[in-house]
Length: 549
Image 1 (spheres, rainbow, N blue to C red):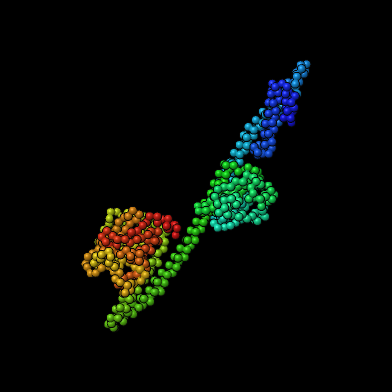
Image 2: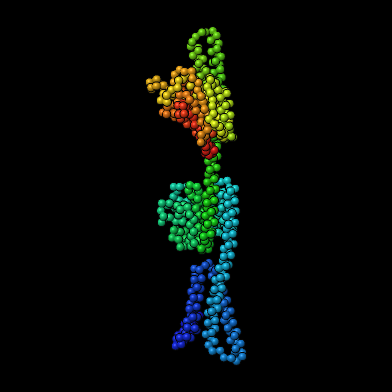
């Protein structure tokens, strides 16, 4: 209206350029600026409705205040009998100036108030997210976790509704698994299509899964992909929303959708806070999945241990008892009969005894090691050497072999088997060339006579073997200077049941590998410095390997 009045004044004053500029054009421009800003405020293009109302309120106050002030001056002049020319135009110009001043003050005041309210709201949001994060830590099941997050986001009144949908790579749709804020009948029919291969056709949910980034929708009715839900959103009063991906270590586990009944809600700071919440939820789901996998693995190990215990019981009782009866009857028979065949029977029974001992060792030491402690390698090796028949062999140490995290009893068994293996296959053997066929352990069968040279360790000699224990960069080694093991046979020597030694059970080195793997170690056989066999144990990273098991 002020602009129209000033335009009429400009028409009347067009003959006087100076008056035209001062009394018509300047007020007209100011009036048009006020009218334009007012229109933008009403359409909420410059800020939310509270911002517009407060700014326009100050504009009215400024207009009225300046009009009243000028009118008071004119009234005073009239009382004194003084004439005031152009009083009407002056009052209108004062109204225009007052509107401008009020508009400026209103924008400044409204912006400050919006900033204070926003800071308070962000504080409430952060408090809500902090409480939700704390309760996530206490949640033990994913259902509980998702329900808690949705409830906390809607309890404070900051958001009107929230729901979480689960996603597994390959899924074509995501459906709500937990929700709060609106009726069940709204959430239950929801079904969001996921197309991670398309960068243009997917909605905000699909984009959140594909990119792993939060998708803010400041006006849901301006988002074409949400058109199928416009009626439902309008019914619930939803004007803006944010889709927060639940980002895990390998992929997104789904997304969290948050509704608000106001447009332009999700600014940069709020989106950052919600993104952190999504990452926290994703990591919490990762932890729950890992705990469940660990629990399943522990139950599997428990069942395996139970089966090992049952096996050990069968071996130690059901097999040992009839074997003892056979030994007793054999001794009685040999007292009455002198027959070489009874000697072969005795040898067979002794071999059965050895097999039973080795099988019991596998059952006892094959379990995964749960309780380890620092063990001095040299001390264990010396004790194992003292309990092994060494037949003149020598034990030496290459500097200090250090310590390892191990079960001392099982590590002792490893050294005993390795020492026995070196001594037994070197004390009656010549130093074979590396290309000779040797026996240094076990595989799954005896070589047949027609398969070439037998896998043995040399011929006759009285030379004594020297066994060396030392440290490597990532573990320790045991090495002898006896006959080496051909490279083609090195993988086979750890297999159970294979032996070329007369009377051997074929389990000695298989037990060594089993105990090493139970610790989370690896063991490999190579050629020693003097051409003998060298067993290298890699113990670095054993703790992580045991956890995976």
